[in-house]
Image (cartoon, rainbow, N blue to C red):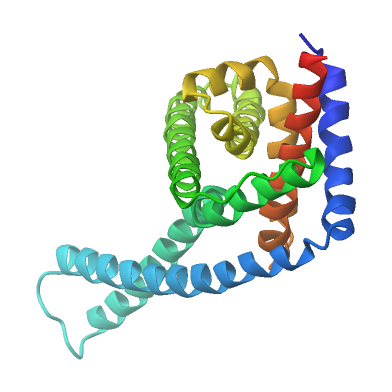
Length: 258
């Protein structure tokens, strides 16, 4: 089995190669497709946060102050308190949305990623398979299923890790471990499109990813860092990520079969 250092080297190398590959084969227009996703997510996210915060604020204020105090000093205090509650709710909802934005992007971009992964493999191998709408739908549904699966597992790990935050000795290790799991599951989600085309069940894909966990972590790490770039990151990260993951898997497949 390949060691940690070689896996890290292959992971970073194929990300650099992915940029070159995209422009060499005129795949740069794929960057514009997630841009529409950015607009949709921004509109839906803004509308959702505003609606939820308004409803929760009204409910909490009504529960705390059931009697009307219109025109009094108490009403002024209630109005100020309502503003603070609304801002706090918006901040918390925005934080949750930001933390899980990577998974939201992977779910919404699933059709693009499934197509681009297949196209990348065809360009590398020179073997193009006839388009099958049924297989395309299978790739999309499998991609969404794996993202949801990884999201649930990571959320469970996150909730469990909160128990250790309060232990002084262990709290310094909690966040790095959380980041590691996050990067691992993001990388797994990107690799799974190649697994699906080979008809691998999720269990086989999980075993393969576990054997190359450092590689998955590298892909998730680079994806997460690119996503931090305002506006541009959400357009670049999924496209570069899926091309790099496909190139990487093909290199591993060639190595193991030769």
